[in-house]
Length: 369
Image 1: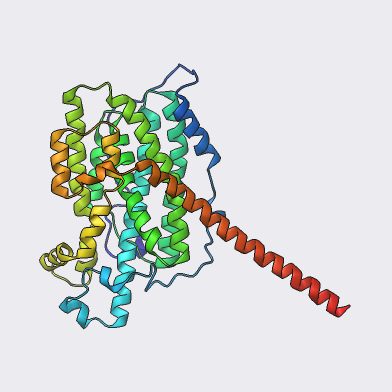
Image 2 (image 1 turned 180 degrees about the vertical axis):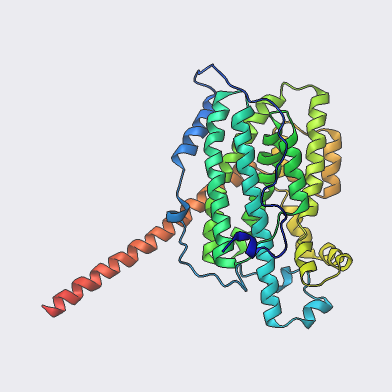
């Protein structure tokens, strides 16, 4: 079956061509590079994994309740439309929301793969090229995982959201080599990490929990890479150059805030666009969700040296200014630890099952003897 057959609406042309600008940079200085970046490159090599083997794809997923989503978190909850819905209708709504959310994860991961490849091409430093090459492989694996989850377990996809597409286009069209870092590593990846984490920590379904935990283990390295590279570079920029980057961050943050409403889903259920927008704006859960989604972006932006007055005012307007003091290193360490803990628990359970199976076989043989 073609993927196109699973889209709830026509995604347009199969290929989206974004005009590329900027130079491809070679570097003939093969020195040792920066210790921190080379250590991250080594970690990137050591932590490669196979999605086919590490994830237990035999786990069942109920398409009508893929994540164990509570009723209260649905933006239609408590409205006249919700009251008229049957349990089947509500199951369909949960399926559509999951398809929409994970479709944006999928499209974002493809965007991250393209941006990582662009960094390999355009960044002037060889140590950064080395690490970006490992990230390109990581992002390919993530796109593979989300594609498989949507096609095999949910059976439905949504096209890329307009705001996410606009941010990707702005990131890729810019000729300055640092913009794929800023647009992808800081903004899009930062937002994705927070979204992944909220679902990972609240879902009671084992397959999506596995997927998100393992993807986040990789993403923690990616954000660390962006922070290292941009922190060093932005120390050299003029106030005017920093202001241009801050303007890009401000526009990107507003775009992403507006991306997170899922209006496409409600409109797909026949809710008039104006009412759909009102329901999402009134949703207390969505307000909290949108605020927490900036928990990875704001401290990262502050850390790399973009913290001018206009940017601070924008974060006050978005209601996320206080997140600038969050401990990003602690959050990233927890992401890695959770994935390792999940591995340990899974493999311990598998080992116990194998031991019990062997013991039962031995006991059966002794009884027969």
